[in-house]
Length: 636
Image (cartoon, rainbow, N blue to C red):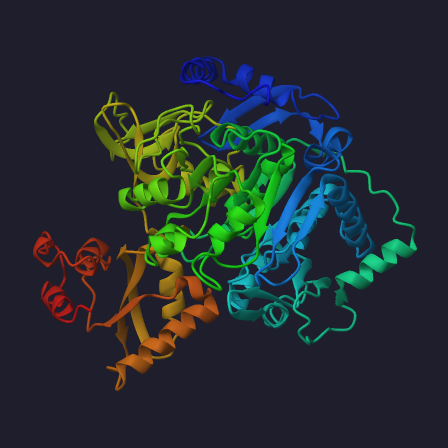
């Protein structure tokens, strides 16, 4: 039990009311349970117009002291990270808190030996191995700002992010394993760095033993650098004192314009919010084995594999592979093998596993499970019931968590076994979170049985502070749509019981397999193909992914071989962004539905992609309404 853990519905309502009436007092009381070098001078100052948000101003701390050092006396021998490799025959690893602290200090000294200082940006591009978590924590230890890039992104995407952050240091692996594939990571970094001559050092961890090119004067091996630290006698590495509002990390996310934006999170508020939500939503108790299947390249991995669990002294299970390899029982095998108590995964993964039938699941006991969770997108009712009946055996509460990269942690979710759950509903806000539904003009929709755009009317500690290097973009994206509100970009309904259900994005950002992908970013990539004149991308329902990408493409001349052209365009998108952004359908069209001012009417394209041919709506405002009939005729 934790002193701020909510254990009953009555207590939730009591705590929630307190958090709304006195937010500063509420969060100050929780923050007092953490290790601070110096207490804060002011709990909160904020202005959503600018925007400017500061939590625990003047407070001094280091997040790694809260994730590691403070646990050593009582829990030094408790497993911090359990690692399950991609190959089920490879050795597993269990790293205790004492061992993890030692490894983090050791690698922090490697970073210092290679010139990394407080405030430097460090790009991390690795597979799902413990060294990835160690790299994050080592950066935080010395006050360097980490920017993790998902291992599926292309050289172009890495280059764009490095340039935006002016990241002078890179940490990578020779390669990684994912299912039956071996992915060469170092060559992708080499390609990315052609356009990044400012990078001073690349530290390479040898994981797959793949031969790689090492650039003299720039590239060094992780293990050799560790040996140098050992030769120095493994000197201590005291944690750098950080202000609560100092930058902790940058994480890039797709937006409604083509350029990814670097969401900035800071040290103090983010830590407290990640910890508080982890403990309360999952009802974590010391000794529980917690398994989050996300990748650390996304915010879920940052908050709920690394910082949330470790700041709570939890045991966090990391998995290198995929749920369906070498067979569709792999995830359930892991649950039984480690006696997992809490499982947090994506609806996409569940829908994929459902397709293999319940016979696969029935081979496993799954009796250790106490709590189930979902993340990345709203879970559909069919998947919710399958999860409940076949995995939880109708005895494990399911937490359906809604949140974003920008929020830092869970915002709306039931608390496991404490507050009610409802299939496909995120249900109630976390204490300290103040959601509001508004209409298109920004007027608040009060009461229940209403539907509108989801906003927040008060800051919370884990929220983004800016978009790196472009504060105006932060204001325009999140704070300019509605006066004095943070706009999430999601539509939402509140039912007769006051429960919230997320109904999807209302901007040009799609949620594909739980990952946010901006349509403009994909269109930019498609348009780089020499034969493409223009394109428009929309989403359409997909049984496994939730949403998939449908591209309407105008070519300079109609392709002689449409299938080959589709493959070429898909390959272009993969090389510019990564395989996760490949369109599922590419339709060649002679024109796009545009208004007389030149705006593409994506509403019409969405209807066609979804198969709603009879419900296109008014086309009289279009420059050439006949284009719509041509597109409908050629629908894939």
